[in-house]
Length: 335
Image 1: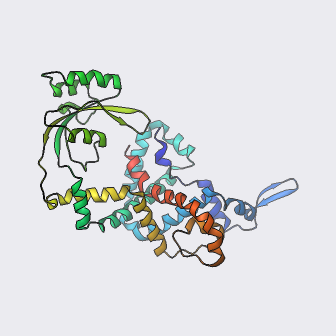
Image 2: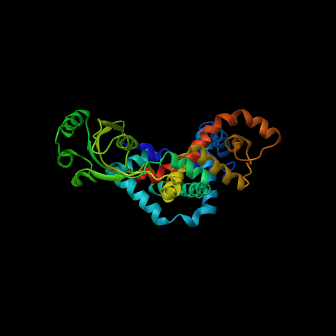
Image 3: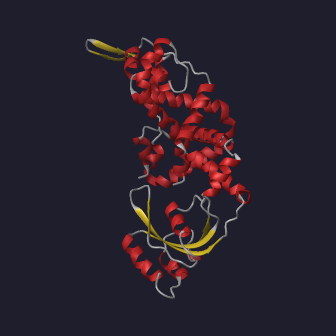
């Protein structure tokens, strides 16, 4: 079960508690023989909980990015990503939502927040398109090759097919049609074209292809997947392109590579979120939450002293909140 798409989920109970406390101060929420628990008492306990602090950070990120980038994220895109996730989980979707404390509407909100952050990260990445970065990307760029692949689900099957594929006079196309489990390439005899920036081909497969001479066949390539199992590939290189010495000949492709790398760079994502939170001029009214925002805002006096020790331990948590807001929904929904 691919549970990672819910890794950035906001706990609905915590959201409800934090939102309700500001409007219900002093009210009893539980009564019992000889005692009561008030909203204030409950809030004092909840606010020091790490998960609750993460909820507050997520809420701030959502509101700030919605205000600035809301017009750039379309409802249709959110709906499409949601439907992809729903389809991927099939009949288990409702159960997974429940296990993560989410309703369908809450999950859609999470997807929307993720897309807002992704949009901001992409805009920031486009500012990194300098000649220096283009040249750096060019150094590691391999132009398009034509290859054939055979994908199988077990190592034993892979070894069996590999022996056939490496036999003298082997018809790789026919072997692919008879054995490959890759629906996209199977009927084309395994044929596929890609360069080093292609995202629909596993890195290990690209690496194996680029290392071959034309008509060469790779050894068995193991590709772990997100479910702690693996797929196995056999690659034949059909044709490779000569690489130009001028990076500008590949400018459009290099642009996509640079942006894609930035979108995966957790430090870069963190810096984008930090800038947006700083620009929003956040003021934390409860010192219990100072540490979770300390890396983003100016703090003074006793608040800074009291939160500095906690700040370092919260930094990685805050970073995770920012990163999950960027990468979770759209990439994993597609799975």
